Image 1 (cartoon, rainbow, N blue to C red):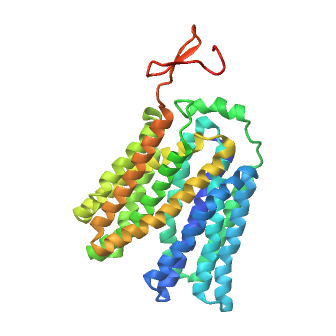
Image 2: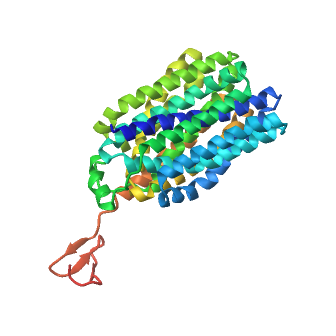
Image 3: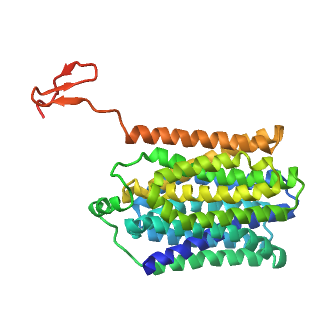
Length: 416
């Protein structure tokens, strides 16, 4: 792996760490200020909605302008938004207003960062190396998310909010410097992209963007809604401590990291499409039984579920990245990210209502039903697009097209 490619991995890790530290730290500030669950819920909505609305549009921007500069620009603006929170608190601006405003600003930036970073990866990483690189990239993102909870909670408890958010701003600056160190690079031509495509895809047939966006976005739905249901199940219904939730999250992270290591073999052997579809179906089968048998079984099921889900997530990312032209990767990830966040809000509300009226078993079942429906829809969509109906046979000698009904029709352009 080239030095420039290796620089993108820590940059992605640092950005993921910074974004999640900001969100978790802000939520903890609201809780410490005796904010209600509704206040915290509005915070997550303030983060999700702008990304859902703006991601498709920002994806087009990522395809029109220099992706490296866009990534660096996102980091600079994110650092400024992160610094606004401690500065505002120091001068006496109301805390709740600052929390919502700074995280809203970061969400707007993230709507551009997701497609710009994906497009930069597709631009700079050769097609034969994409499978391995995507596995490493997902490891970087997940490690950033996993560490953000412990770093944010520990720093806020022992050092206070100002050092935490100043450190957070520094992480964005560090990410920008790493991407600057990648250097300039010319985009590959369309001919070069087509020449390299067979190295990563077993067929030249392009899979439908809408179906891949549906699968990719559904992964975000599963992770977010599961993370919301888990503390309700463990703490609220099973009366266990928050530490148990942390252990379960850690096992989920371990399963995902293991999936990233194994994916490089399973992806080559079975193909990304099979890995993605099987992984999502297997994950849903495990999700529906997770709240039924107690903490010990839950931990084992979460480990295995994260393992199969992680491979599906990485495979879907690779499919989405290689099934469109390099010049349209930003748009593809913008659409997928926008759908995923919009669907997350809807599914979260549905699962919350169902869980509130019954219990988490039915909340998990609701998530599984919606996720399975999305996976089946994507599979049917891909099958119809990839394996169209058998074309009409041609009678070359007579210059006619013979349809399945047996009726001969003269082609408009004459004899082939």
